[in-house]
Image 1 (cartoon, rainbow, N blue to C red):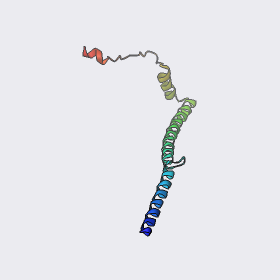
Image 2: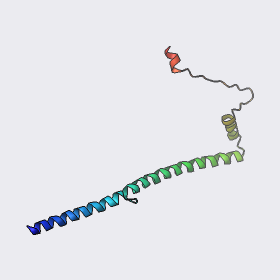
Image 3: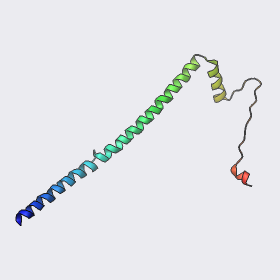
Amino acid sequence: MAKNKRKFFFLYLFIIIILTGISYLVFNEHGIIKYVKLNDEIESLNNQIGKLEEENTNLKNEIDSLKKEIPAKIEQVAREKYDMLREGEKTIEVKKEDVDEKKD
């Protein structure tokens, strides 16, 4: 009987030590939960870096085409950014109706 109690005592002690160790690994300052959060943040930042690199490439290409004074590119920038028109062209504005006005 004493042997049985001693076995259960060591079994419970072992289980408590294992659960304490697992809890420490999961919930401590450098634990698994923090590791998973940091990996998600790294992935998000890498995606953001990829988008910014693509935007930089597009901007460099635009700068190069403007430096080379490509007429079509200069005209495109003038029309889009500065709302410029060629001689004889007219601007036509299309106004959208509100949804509320159509119902009345």
